[in-house]
Length: 146
Image (cartoon, rainbow, N blue to C red; front, side, top):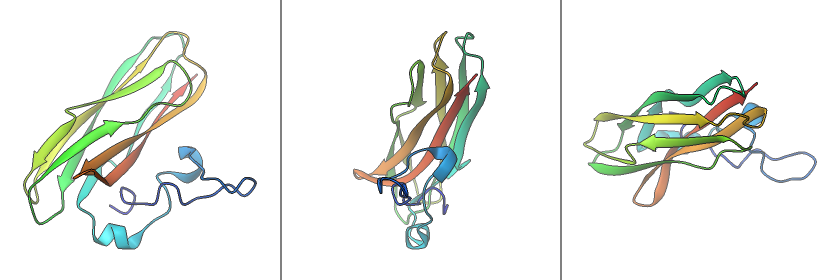
């Protein structure tokens, strides 16, 4: 839960002062214990890694993530995956929303698609969960094209 509610832009580059976004360097961000105590949702697992994928494979793979409502009321959670870094790898999530009662959990499926000849190296994105237009949880999504 601490990871899903971390401050994703809090870790700064010592050379530029800008926010670091490389999940290999910062994970999902700096812990925010107040946010963790007041968390409305949790993701399990806390990150999604599709591992190493050969560049010429044109591979597609899926990963299930459990979303739990930690709040005291029912809520509709919107789930999305941001754009991937690099070229040739894309991510999607289904379903894009879940209605959950307090204490209830549901499953979303994150799918990674890599085109043949995708750019080599790490590809990353963020799985975001929102309720009432505010982010309530997030997770790093990663694929390494070799």
